[in-house]
Image (tube, rainbow, N blue to C red):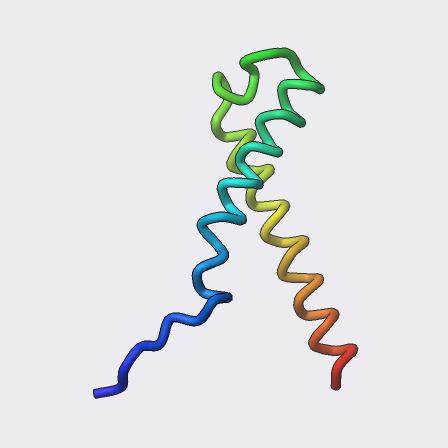
Length: 67
């Protein structure tokens, strides 16, 4: 049975997601009014998905640049 090693990179997602949630709330509320993000969690979810897509694209781009 293989042993699982937790790398520093593996520990970053919770912190990153928390930062994206906070940034999303600030951005959504600034654009649409105080409390809008809390009242519309699906919009915050879409914001988080967009952040994930952007991050993934950047990682793939860097990987391609290194090849």
